[in-house]
Length: 294
Ligand code: MLT
Image (cartoon, rainbow, N blue to C red; front, side, top):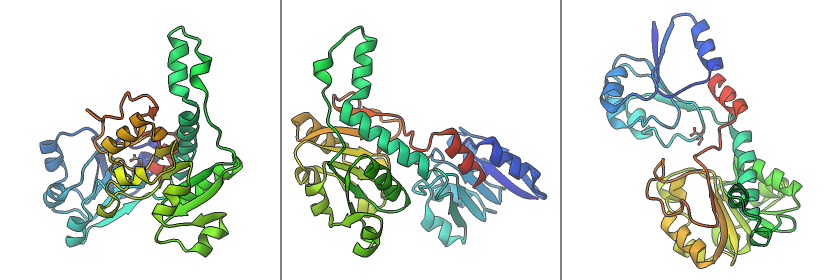
């Protein structure tokens, strides 16, 4: 029997596939505390996680039979890949399953930030009628700066073009020709920050991208620009961004992800001008089904 532990919730469609497979036994046990997780992984051949389980070196060391870790989602930053590699454990993800959901969510956050939809909604809910306080900005004829021009970045760019935006992108792995082929002008990071009215992040969390958006990056952005982060919280120095918003250097921000989730004590939470939601990029029925199947 091939034993699988699923330590975060997984859609029924994926569970049905596993149930139909011969020689496979699985247990879905989301929300295990640390000692219970270390005990539960001890005898399994495979571990399936989403973002809540941290498959760190201790978990990998405790999983003596482990052969494969499946990440039901895109980012594998919650898995210690060095520890996994050292043991010959394969780490696989579901790279395309929730790309559409994240791209659409990014557009939603962009528009919500441009028009301050959550604040306007809350104001009407409170019985107010303050139309003059919620004058927004348009996307049309503005420049979108996409940092990280992979699958999701390109999907965001394609959708933003439908709003009449010009696209500039920064990605050290994408050539000028490849960018031009999908309608984007490739730039270096400083050039993009200086050119973009809206900056959106679609790169991975790594030591190189930690606090990519800090005080210096914000100082290099256009006055009144908007920042959207639906990728990973570590890409942005939340203190720097809150200073940028509070000073008026930036007009608004759309924040889906946080360095620590839930974002306890994060200065962006509740700050006027910041639209924040609880890491919802992949949270559509369609994406959850795709992720579970993939
Ligand atoms: C992902 O990496 O797939 C998304 O951030 C969604 C998630 O973490 O669940």
